[in-house]
Image (tube, rainbow, N blue to C red; front, side, top):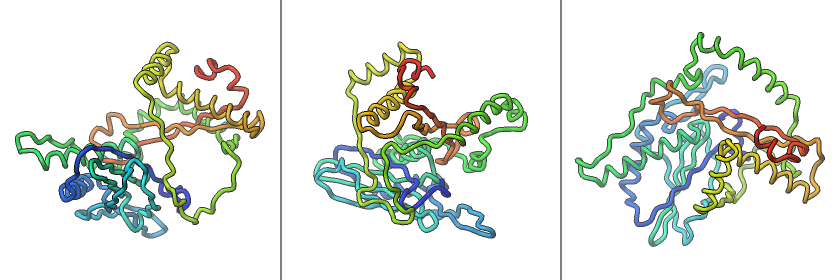
Length: 302
């Protein structure tokens, strides 16, 4: 995640939370520092030594940066900048408020944590803030975390015996890797790449969102249940169909083009029960061509 980070293509993730009512600025900043101090990778910077060996250096008791903004429409994402974790911690908080509500947007560098780790940090932040306004009898205990588990995130709790048991399935993985290397996916829309050092655009992060209502959500769940598939599989199938429909209508590409979806997979298991915010994620690549979309049901179950 650090090696793939580029100024024009930041390796960042964002979470936006919406609240009604006022925010106590002093309590929030104290809660932010307390929560960040519980998660070593969110309160550290990257340093190099020797032959560019990267390592984390803690910056304990240094609060993450908070950017306070006032905006009549706080639902807009504020303009963000590239996070350079060699000069700053990989967490920036944007607080956008108006007269009767506030939103805060958390910007995480992906080398610090994945989505699950980001939500883990946010749970701590909200609990610390809530505890600061509650009497002692109503304060909630924070989840237990163990920094000694951080080195395990590179081995995923695999012992030698567990690795040996995985050999048969790993042989299938080698075949998948061969296909991955031989295929060259195309961009959804032909475009000129931006130079990697040019910086993110002025509207970064450019976010489009859509919210399903209750009836639509129930329909999606029911459809997945009837077809005995997960909602993820159903949505991935429909995304392939939508992309191919778009490309056909726009007369983009050819039948032999490969489209690729990158699906994140959470690798946390029993070894990660008390893991602080970190990366424990891998990627599964789904490749399909136009002919695969001719039969939607086969595409779904494939």
